[in-house]
Image (tube, rainbow over all chains, first blue to last red; front, top):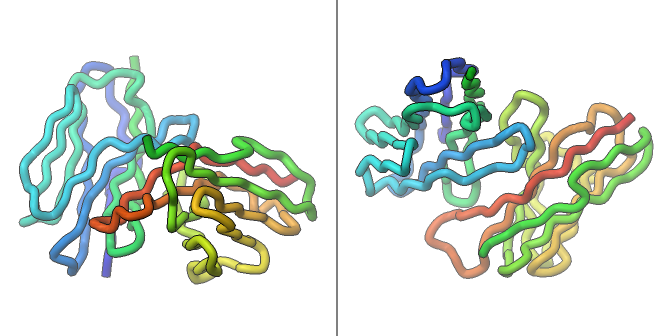
Length: 112
Length: 118
């Protein structure tokens, strides 16, 4: 079965703190893709990253970084020095053949 | 590139009326478009997959007679909510798959349509 689990329903931190959003996935496919999306209050999904199953290199983009570990089927997302503008719901998703499997989302609240 | 638009962005209608939502790929051809529904504080739920020129494939539990999908061209898909009721109030998001890109299911998302049925 294909499944994405985001166990953290809501996280609240004070601005400038680092925060990690967890994502654990299940799939039997050997080739797959993992995604992170940001959904601000406006509702429009913002694409953050795509990672294929053959590339386990961690990635850093500014304050954002991602840790992909196939051994634990995890694809965690870390925001360093968080800012109020980072407040949003973040979704992790798994590409399986013809459709995306979505996690439940983690609501991130950054307090000033 | 790869921009998807939705119209309208927000609609309020009376119970019993029908509402049409348009999804357009502005700068690419989309062989496949997807329609999602998102209730407050929940994740996206795939409603249906539509391919240009053929009937849409609906997910289990989605009433095809209530949610009419027409994918008339490679750049336009429409979702019509027929005889809308308050429980149909939701955020509807479409996405489009770029024609010719088959290496993985890359989808580009529209900005969403917020439907409120009174």
